[in-house]
Image (cartoon, rainbow, N blue to C red; front, side):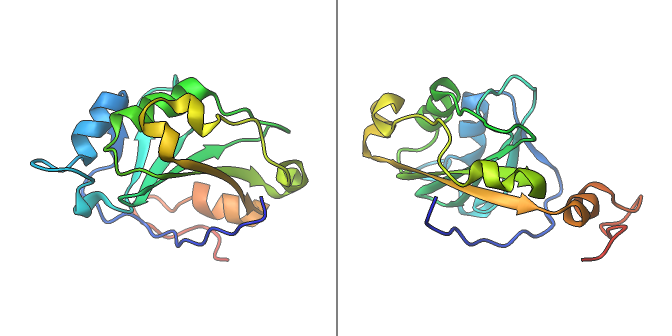
Length: 164
């Protein structure tokens, strides 16, 4: 986990939250209507699985047509990413995805547990589309104030209770 991934988190201006029921449902939302690749208007949008049965991640973002960010929010000391969950999503998405970034989002007191890579799929195990992709792991650490700021919003606004 020596590389750095830099991105900005902004509140969504989308009219609706983006959920998906299964990989095929996600594909219908993000694939270009009459073409190959990802709909430009959905680049950078945060998508969440509708149910709690997604075993490998809690949300995802396509920051560009070649990269898939998988966010795993966890309190666990270690967290395995299962091949099946990543493979299903990767094989349903457009074949433009060449890079998968798994981001373990952890509280500050667990940061030291995520300094080395967690158990994750080998790109060769992800199927035909997965053979040409790379997988990298990152950690995103939140202190208690940051977590409270995100989780606790004033009713009817985007304003946090705590400003950081």
